[in-house]
Amino acid sequence: MDTREAQEIMRRVYFERDRARGVDRTVLRTFQELSELSEKIMEQRNQSEIASEMADVFAWVCSLANLLNVDLSEALSEKYGDRCSRCRASPCRCDDTP
Image 1 (cartoon, helix red, strand yellow):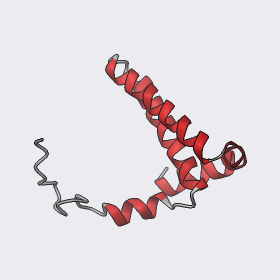
Image 2 (image 1 turned 120 degrees about the horizontal axis):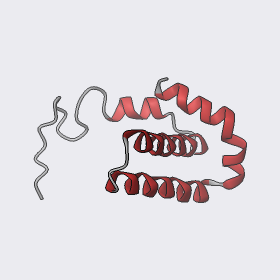
Image 3 (image 1 turned 30 degrees about the horizontal axis):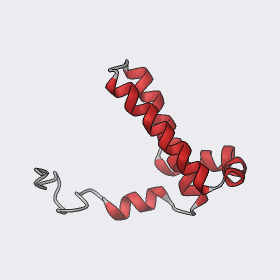
Image 4 (image 1 turned 135 degrees about the vertical axis):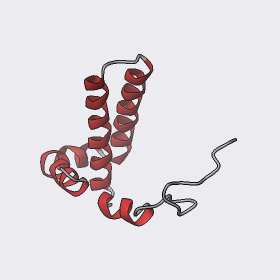
């Protein structure tokens, strides 16, 4: 499944619930899911548990995009394309040292 398909599935299955919940509470749920993912990674859980949490995070990001009328596939393509969004190189050549 690609990004556009994922976003459309979230729209079809959850949009009415997402709209009733509202953007603020959907943002909160997204952060809660990100926290759960972080916990699984830090606990060094198995790949299946981590993948499941990643799917949850992505699904909530899709829900937010739907509520905010953002096409994630288009946004990703515009920002990243096939290169780094900062240095514009591929592979990235940014100096990430603090």
